[in-house]
Figure 1 (cartoon, rainbow, N blue to C red):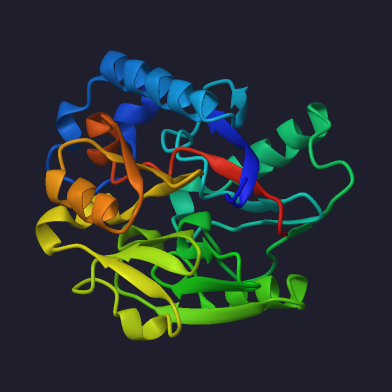
Figure 2: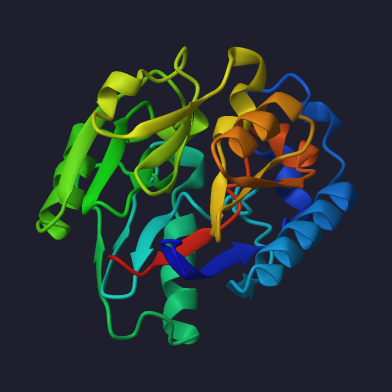
Length: 264
């Protein structure tokens, strides 16, 4: 398999999800029942692509906890538990650590936590298969957090990308074989020398948050035919998921799972 992971963690959306942190003007229209149905469909797509899915229970205390990508960056050998730049989410990562221990997940890996003034959120981290990872220095992730990540993954090249986006992955995602999908008006391709690009317009920017499923299949949000066409032109097969209720919460298809990366 050419993808970077074979297992992911997901969390069912809680009823409190309506109170999530979001700049989307449609946030007030979040439909919880529809969100749960869409989440189930999302999980089904992952399973259909031979990805092992560990489903965690909803967490009413933290409305944003359905966005499992953010609390940590997980690997089979090493993992880093982040520290949220969004203060209302702090504590969410500690619940995840407790669940990891209870489920005996990652028991053979080193698990370190971001300390001090460092902040680090998973949505800012783009993993590649080139022994290189890119980290967005954003409003959610700061230089102190990136330094701690760099110290843990000392054998990999960790590249800082300064961004005005909430998270780096709001504007780009790694696919496979030195190829990424990107909205150049949001993130400059010059930050990623040596990579090839599937370039999207601002109209299709939401689809640049994409999840590579392996076997040339790419999960993107439904409703972006131009993005699907460009992926097909690049030799990929788009797989669409309706995630409208998570878009309202400022989340995308990568946000809804926390992969356990084989290369970390």
